Image (cartoon, rainbow, N blue to C red; front, top):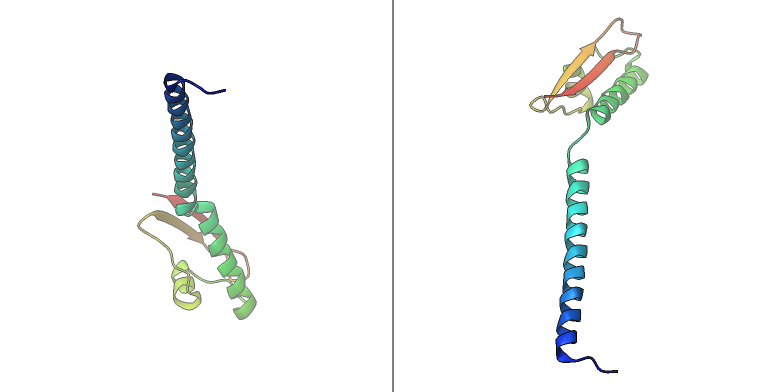
Length: 103
């Protein structure tokens, strides 16, 4: 069965439309995926700080007195332009209270 020239054009246009829709949907999904994974979340940064605190306690026997101590001695890098950091120490043998907020 052979389609007429007019029907072939319609089928090609429909196929082209479907292909464009699939491509655009894929690109939109990838864009939202990369936007969601490109920036660190405050919860992830807080966990990294707490992990560094535990490492300091394991090696030195006390929790770090400040975030600057972790930056200077444990290689922690904090983006102070994008986040606010709250670090409260009660005692050297008690886990510090750490909170991270997006500016």
